[in-house]
Amino acid sequence: MPTFLRLEKSFDLFNAGLMISIFYGGILIGRLFVSFITYRVRANIILLIMAVVSLLSISVIVYSQSIYVIFMSIFLGGVGFSGLFPLLSSTGCMVYKYSRGVIMNFLLMIAVFANSITPFLIKIINRYNPTLPVNIMIFFFGLIIILILVRWYFDRKYKCSL
Image (cartoon, rainbow, N blue to C red; front, side, top):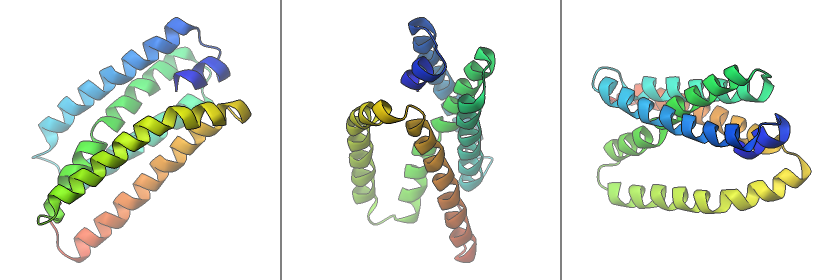
């Protein structure tokens, strides 16, 4: 996102770095928020709301020209993104109780692999189209929403309590 903001939105280095701090501040507040409402609201509803907030905030960043709207969208993107991985891993371990160690190993392995390969892919993609990595992120948040809805359907069909 900082690379996109510097190339496409002409942000200076200070504001692009500030965006990272605002994003992680959103993650911190989002995790606190999720920890307070986890026992009051079903996990599928929290996952769906957070994925929609992330999708909308990233979409606003791409199409907005106001720096203040972009700052607020970065913050909301951090809030939305904050609870996705912890809730997905914890609810996945609740469904697959007997193989939760294997599931957690795969989730962590995929996360580490994605974190290590993403900078190289973004560098290659940015040479040809600077907006493509952000559009890919929007696509994947849309895919997350679809998968959460499919999971919600199967939870209701087979009477799971997530």
